[in-house]
Length: 214
Ligand SMILES: Cc1cc2nc3c(=O)[nH]c(=O)nc-3n(C[C@H](O)[C@H](O)[C@H](O)COP(=O)(O)O)c2cc1C
Image (tube, rainbow, N blue to C red; front, side, top):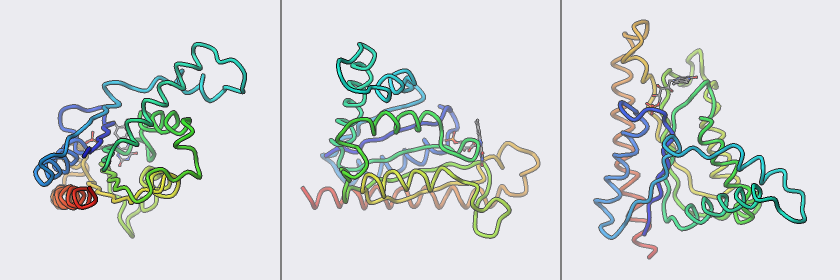
C-alpha cells in the first residue's frame, strides 16, 4: 500500500507546503502500518523541459534518442503514479499560478498513453493537493479568484485523471516575513493550524480507505 508524495516548493527550510504534507504523511504512516511512502521531489530533481519538448514533438516513425528518453521518463512517471494507492501533491502558489516544476511534471506525465485525457486512470483514487499561498484569496477578498493553480490542479487530477481530490490550503504564509502583512499574522496562524488539522484527518481517512479496499 503506497502513498506517493510529490513536493515542488523551492524551499527546503520553512516550506509550509512541505510541513503540511509531512503532517498528512505522518497520519498515513500511523494509521496504515504496512503502508509505505514513495517520494518525488521536483525541486531536487526537476523534470527537464527538453524531455517534454522531444516527446511532445514526436510525429511518428523512428524516434530520436532524445524522444526515446522523453517517452521513457514519461513512462517512469506514469508507473510511479499508477502504482500509488493514495497521492499527495505539495505545492506553493507562484505568480498566481502553478509552479513550473509541477507543470513540467504534469506535461510530461500526460504524454504517457496511460495518462492521456479520456482514460481517467486514477478513477476513485484519493489525491490531496496541499497548497501554500503567501497571500489571502478567500471569498470577498480583493484577490478572490487570483489563485489559478488550485483550480488547474483540480481540473487535471479530478476531471482529467478521475481522482477523488481533496484540497488542503494554508494561506497568508508571507505574513510571517512581510512587514506590511504583520497584522494578518493571527489569520495566517489560524489558516496554518486548520491546514495541519485537515491534513492529519485526510491522511488518516485515506489510510483507512486504502486499507479497507485491500
Ligand atoms: C517566486 C515566488 C512567487 C510567488 N508568488 C506568489 C503569488 O503569486 N501569490 C501568493 O500569494 N504568494 C506568492 N508567493 C509566496 C508563496 O506562495 C509562499 O511563500 C508559500 O508559502 C510558498 O510555499 P512553501 O512555503 O511551501 O515554500 C511566491 C513566492 C515565490 C518564491
